[in-house]
Length: 280
Image (cartoon, rainbow, N blue to C red):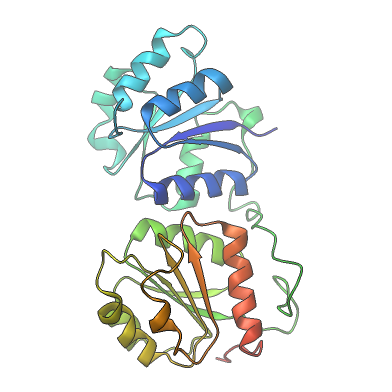
């Protein structure tokens, strides 16, 4: 039996990561983007545990906690803080406020889950790494790409460019469960200089980072032979003309990231490029 866990987090990347991880390990994840929505979900669903950010638009984490503790129906639900600071730096203050504990957003995903599960009754805990890896989203049944762990096929090598470390955690977690080998970089210059060999280039691009020509053009020149997947906040406006001249297969994905759609795009690009992967 798994737990029902509510994530109250306004940062979409953080929220997506936690929802994916909890679901992958068998828990039921509920998600809210602000304090008011989170409080309403808590009252309607009565989750087994709540993980709440402190800095929320409108009603902040402290306000959410006060409202939960004032309601007899939600008073006993454990509430943890999701913080960018190490747990020890604010444990006493958070405990005095009434929170049951806090988790650091900088923790590795598996470590974070292990800490979170310590606040659940034993009957609601699930197996974590060291026992068995979590199930990954199912790959698309179509296409020519072999399923995960297919005998005789070397693992594909992916170059991942992402300027947001938390997004890297989400993408690396998803792709790692499918046995892809990842090289992760956080700026375009490093990605352009990466020597590989690689089988696919995956870029999480936000137009606020830089103009598309300055950000993507050098990268595409350096890795012109690689199939390419670009993730961005919209459906690709502004970069489509730039990608039109890329000689290898290209896929565009929009946020919020859907793990099965990501795996489908990766396998489709690899298959369209001939299904071959680099040998060591």
